[in-house]
Image: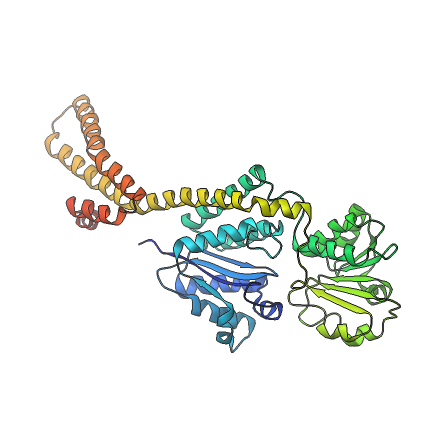
Length: 423
């Protein structure tokens, strides 16, 4: 039996940031969830993706495990009332819809900023985590490599990935717009995780900005500062640097808000101070905006700018969708052939067993040369006999009639009985 592929998705489309940050999974939680899915439900083809914009679980199983999986997520997050969040989840039961959704997510079509380049690496890491846990079987391996090949086609054949239009780049565009009237704006970037690192790289495009980096791991900040020409301070000096900065970008992982209203009140704000919170869970209290002169933007506030690069990407969407459809059809051709492969192998094994038995029965006294000749003739005969049902099975795959043809051939050659007899 081929298990149907399904998906559970909580994303920015249905869930605000305060819900997404509650459900978001770190690497440790993903590992633990994979273990539980393997042990409790014997799920083998599983992918767990958790970013600032979405938490998704893809899996192949004959049963609908969506509620059970959401409950397991609640267990990992210490949520006793996780079922109250069910309304924020999209549950995709249809095999092809789930596969199509994963393709679109992986290409960046479902990203908050269309064409987000970070998602490709995030999907690769999710796949690596599944592989490391032996939670990726032939189905998922083939699916993911088809997705990676499709991504290459999108890069090579379309303008969808031209320029930079990630969440981090959108944040940089926002900062550039809001500081356009400030001479040499002082920008402090706190935290150099994946998004923070991307922000630091894009900051070089803000003319005359004085960018300062700080990170809990000081060595990484020093390395990036040297590479990009940004200033670097020890993490211990972060609060003093916040006071002096015109813009504070927080991309730091913290269970509690790192920047609070009480802290912000202590700053000497002469005209304005812009805070940009790129963390999930959020690292800046929303009430900081109550402080005069403070502006706060988070990942939900940051909207994509109508840049030329983004316009080219949007114009390329139909072409990208066409490439995705081609890839899905190719994948389904393979998937259908995988469906008939066990029957083809059973038929080959059944005929080979008959051939060997008949050779043993009639060629007991044959010479080695005679045996070799007859062995060759009977092998050729068997290949010709099996050719027609194999061709018919593969043709039935393309017409979505494989199941009926499998039943006919299994009954005709009594394959279930033969398989049991020779097991």
